[in-house]
Amino acid sequence: MPETTEPGFRKWKIENGMIMSWLINSMNNDIGENFLLFGTAKDIWDAAKETYSSSENTSELFQVESALHDFRQGEQSVTQYYNTLTRYWQQLDLFETHSWKCSDDAATYRQIVEQKRLFKFFLGLNRELDDVRGRIMGIKPLQVSGRLFQRLGVKKVERK
Image (cartoon, rainbow, N blue to C red):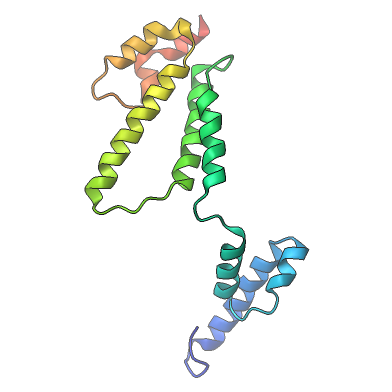
């Protein structure tokens, strides 16, 4: 918050009031009323985060991991199956937080995660796609990607 004597204070005050209004109006009335007397948008944000955010995201992580554990292709096309997996993986990326000692740790971890995700993709494919799975396993470097389907002609397999 700038000092009241600073040249940008008036503009800051107007913008802060607008953001405070947005924050409070985006909440249910019962919740928003608790934040009406806060002085800045940052104060509202910090208090709401402290009150309503689970910094560990344990329950969210458990729900996504639980859904992934049992998830299989089933009646979905390979593309639908892959897209659904991708959404789950994006949720995991959002909820997982790590503190790295160095950037190499993050890069190594990312490689491990990608390999596990690829294996999850393979394990959930229907049995009639075993030949496709074998062709995928032969690709080097082995990666999950949107191009994977085009390279292997999976859409042709799905139509059969």
